[in-house]
Structures are given as structure tokens and as C-alpha cells.
Length: 175
Image (tube, rainbow, N blue to C red; front, side, top):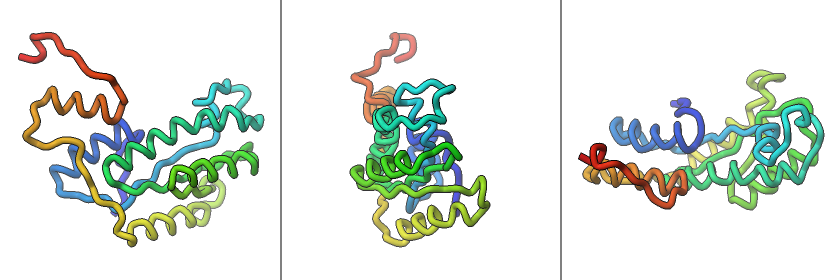
């Protein structure tokens, strides 16, 4: 079964794994993290009007965002595959940089050109997902126990997924 868990390996992924998988008894065999070179360059500081220009420095800086999503999936014990959804302005050097940086993170990144090529354009991503799923390497680890008090669950999510130092809540909320 393939499902979309939601937007991001923080907001959508965390809720899917900590709530839906826990309650439904699901254990994902793989996660696909979808990225675009355009978005990674924006995370690296490039303005929208400049996205079609190759900018390896900004792209490398923007990789911190994708690295965080990879880390989040790994905290849950899920092996991610990176699908780089291709845009026509993506340069060979940019594609190579993303693949190399993902390799340093220990994850495979593949180009997906299904917008232009249909299913054929995503076949490499699908094969990588099957390979990871069949490897059995993903072992779901939930972030918190069901019995944990609500504020401790919130604290755990805030610290582990969003890297907050801590949380605070008014007495009325705690009560």
C-alpha cells in the first residue's frame, strides 16, 4: 500500500507515524521525501525570480532543510528515499550536488520526471522504494509512549522534530 502521509517529514509525517500508524498498527517499510531543486535553492536564499539560474552555493545551503527531513524519518526508524521532482531549469551540476549531498546523508536520491514522462519518469524512484521496502531495514520507532502525559508528548515532538529547546504552557492549559 502506498499512501501520502501529509506535507513534510515534520508536520504530516510526524502525525502519520505517531498517531495513525500507532492506532492502526501500521509499520511503513519506506518513506519517500519529495524535494525540488527550486525549493532547496529558495531555502538557501534564492528569490523566486532567480530560481532558473544555476546557484550551487544556495542549493548547498538549502540542503539543510532536506537533511532535517531525512533526520526526522530516521528518528522514527524509517529509511527514506529522496525523489527529486525535476524542473526544466535544473542543471546537471545541481542534480549532481543534491545526489552527492544525499549520499553523504546515507540516503539515495533519484530524479523523478513523471510530469514530463508519466509513470516512466518515476520508475527509478519506484524501484528504489521497492528495494528499501524489501530490505526490511525500516523498523518503526514511535517518539513517545501512549501513557506519557500530554504535555510531555508535546515537549517530545517540539524538541525531537522541531528542535525546540523546550515548551511552556499557561496554568489554564496545563490544568
